Length: 127
Image 1: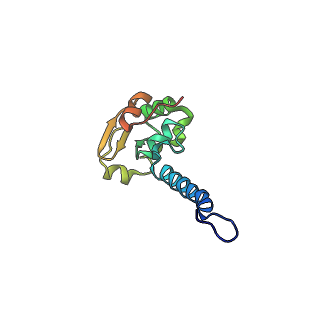
Image 2: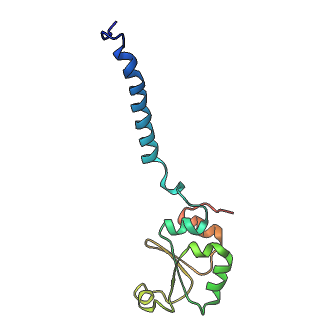
């Protein structure tokens, strides 16, 4: 048995240290590999935004107003481009009808249900 002249075992000192190292490594792995989508998404609008989904619309568009009603208060979490004020951007992207939902190179035209938006973006529907 290995011990110092003061009666302390080096093995007894290293055991808690080894446990601490293992716990720190496990904690780091959980933080690094935890699914990013699970962080702070409590609504469909937040998920749509986190996935890069954008709605293009107009204040004069009745279908856009209906889309806002479908999403209710969660619409504030949606990335929205108002083409009344961003005409150049909308023209550059070829948007001539509203609403348009865009993600990467995919688009959906017209008013969409929450279920269709969730499917489009790969999101859950939150109540």
